Image (tube, rainbow, N blue to C red; front, top):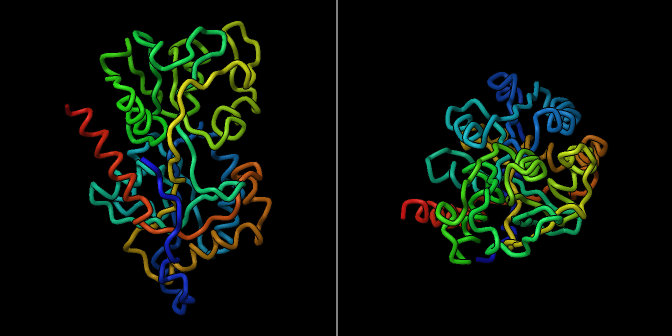
Amino acid sequence: MRRRVLLAAAPAFLAARPVLAADWRSQYPEIVFANVPSENAQGMTDRFSPFMAYLSRALGVKATLRIANDYAAVIEGQRAGNVQIAYYGPASFARARVTGVATDAVLIQVNGDGSKGYYSGFFVLANTPYKTIEELRGKNLGLVDPNSTSGNNMPRFMLDKHGIKPDQFFSKIIYTGSHENAMIALAQGTVEVAANGYNTLEDGTLSRMLAKGMLKTRDGALMQLSDFRLVLQSELIINSPICLLSSLPAEMKAEIVRAFLDAPKADPEAFNRLSNGKDRAWEPTTNAEYDETIKLIRFVDSLRKA
């Protein structure tokens, strides 16, 4: 299944300048920007705090960061109308849409090389004998979250392509709650194989954790990229979207999107902090670009019901 990463035309509201900005600000004196837990809360706070300060200045209202405990919390936050801006993973955005959350994808992350996709893969420790996913029968598998694209949905899709029924093939499947926790479980031997996402092996959850010294062997030695082996890689997955509640005033949506698009020039330090300078500016996107991801989660749902 090839992920589509070409973008459609920009949303219509981008073309219109806000004319009644004070009206939406009186209705929304504070806006909440919620993120799925792609890493630990402190790490996300450190990366996003400068950007939240920029967003507050650009919009003229308080912008508050909310790091969800799990992926479902972002979905339910938008369903309740408590989260105006959401940074979903592709699958959690698809899940929000199919369960009736009125939210729209407006921006997509762009990688440093100009691509708009990433990969899911199965990792093992390099000092183990495992070279293929088929060699891991009876071992423990670490997944991230049921609504994670690269940490659950795409891994299950890949396993099905290899004729593997995970609940029968593996001794135990452990949902670790975050991408970082999955790699910690692998490093500490809680699982023998872990699923995770990455742009390249040098740019992803694993590389960021290694750069921060977060992964250690059982005897306490710092680990390196060479201590891990990739045994299976997915097809390209469309990058994560920035999403806005559909019910927000049009002029409010326009100003939020414009603030995101202006960020690389208006506050390059805050923007670069988000990805350690590895990503390009966001680009406009639409809900239709994630229709293939809806097909993915529905397929995975059918596997689990079978």
